[in-house]
Picture 1 (spheres, one colour):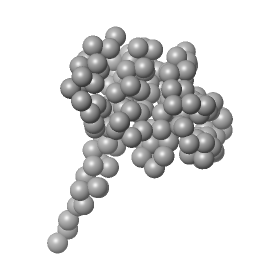
Picture 2 (tube, rainbow, N blue to C red):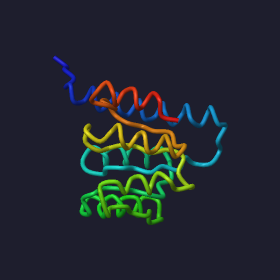
Picture 3 (cartoon, one colour):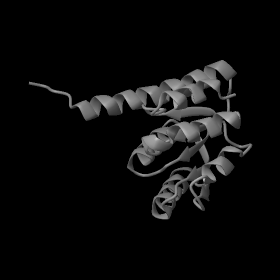
Length: 151
């Protein structure tokens, strides 16, 4: 009997969501150049999302992670795939804010632990970026409303 593991369903859902988000952005903006993406959190999950994005043909000018070994691994991955070395941000727990302020980013993927999704997503949205985040984007009702109200 063929069975699909719950983890595979979640992985497929995340992949489909990422692809749909990119497609919607391109259609809505009639953009012909590649989407320029920053990724915050490039541990196991974030690196998986980064690989999906690279396979979709995006540019990745910047990456951020508080663990330097994760950051260096992801920088090497992007450089080997695109031939360009992205800038890395790792000096502190709010370095993602500096990354989000970059003018050469269209969108930000939040691949961190759930406890920091809301703050990172809000920082990216305040900087005018589209945001891609896995569930849960927020852990409390106040964080949910913070996301809704962010402009």
